[in-house]
Image (cartoon, rainbow, N blue to C red; front, side, top):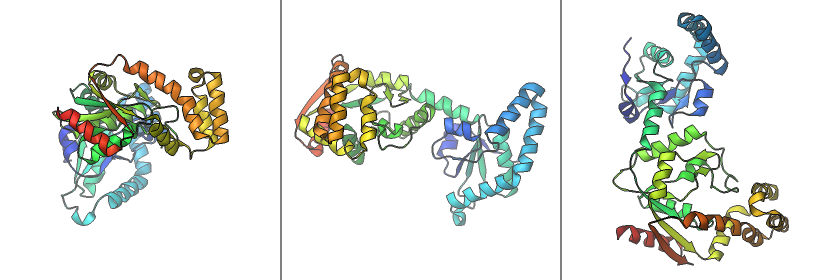
Length: 347
């Protein structure tokens, strides 16, 4: 059998269909971004094999695995061919595109799928060390020193949109809220897709950083350690805390208009639920005021009810920061603010 087992760096740099052959449960917890899941064993089958291994030893477990593969072979081949037909340009396939396969540790599961690929003369590679080697690389990547500049500003300052504009100008931007599918506040999950697991969130961050030059600036939005249910990796967050910060100050009317345009079209029930999540922090009176204002669709009053709390929290967090550049922007637009940001990093 002619297996080509590549180390992670080379494996990642090769173009081609990326197949994760672990169970759906393993894949859901965390996987290499842009991979598709074609499991050799489903969750129940993997559990059965694991129990066989524990109770009867490796040889019996391997035999059980081969029985399951034999019973599932037709469906497995069909699923693989479907993926190949959908993800690869077959006319250009002749040795120009490669199927990349990985399992948990680069063992029998990836080798079994590789055996199938070889039977049908498809070029393939397996990953030495499997997903475990990938996760080790992910975790080590957060220790590497980055030239981070944090973009700060109170709720409604349009920080995320400013970061997106910087990205469109070819600056390096790590958009943590987009990766987490959450805007960071108690209202942050409204209208967003389901958040990734924390492990997958880390994988996505690492893949983004891998595309960047560590000698060049990376812009990151000021965040608390948690974005919804996702937690920023400890080593990365520590770098953010001690990095230079550009603080954008905009007029409250600009902020309120931004918040109204972002949130007012959500259902009243969803908005009320978001307010109730922070009842202890808002206090009973402000919570009642916010709920009543939502019912009346008095969106400006809703904003004032919650901003007092959010602004106090933000000011408390900011007061101990060092190396902060304040940009008082008032009613200036995003383009003018970006010009000031660029000037400030060129000084």
